[in-house]
Length: 102
Image (cartoon, rainbow, N blue to C red; front, top):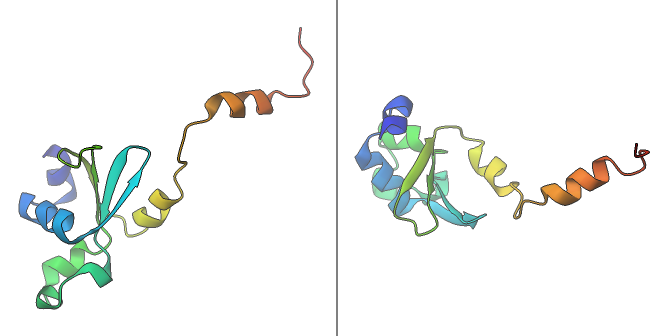
């Protein structure tokens, strides 16, 4: 809850984002992002909900534990571009390909 307090997001708002937000599983983490089209019409004029549009909640693989909270509206686009798998070994080998060994 420390991260929620730093981002000025209450536990009720986290529940709202998890219930109504768009879910996407990437690299074993569940990303819940509240998009404008996900907000129910009953809450469309609520100022506090309007401020939550674009917020992301990162959940563990089971979807039960909150890892972190983000308030950046571009977080959803950035999360979608996240690599599916870590391929650091291939990246490391191609970075030094063509260099002479000692």
